[in-house]
Amino acid sequence: MNDEAYSPDSTIEAYRSVRQADCAERAFMLDAVGIRSEMRFEAPFHLLRVDRADAARAAEHLALYERERRPPPPPAPLPDGKPHA
Image (cartoon, rainbow, N blue to C red; front, side, top):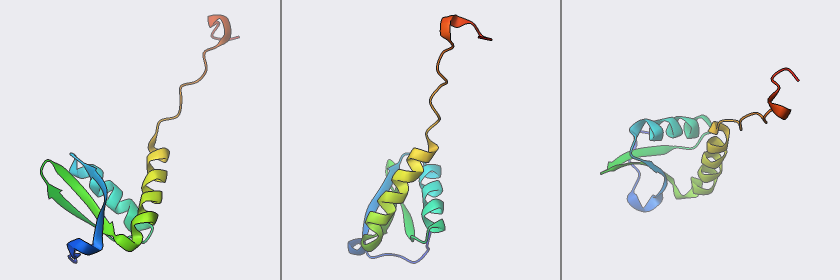
């Protein structure tokens, strides 16, 4: 997250959400891997923008982050419904 303003032509939207916290969380993650970002509000969405040069890396890291956040699948049911089998 950087307070310096990007020019509109040099950035691209990397993520959007109606929740500001979702964008802030992803901005924090991108900052941790060295990708500068900027948050904006364009009703009704909060946008996360990155430099065009970093767009592919940002998309890759955001996709990995989404996969890591998914809950694990539920355990397989036990055979015959016997809990201690």
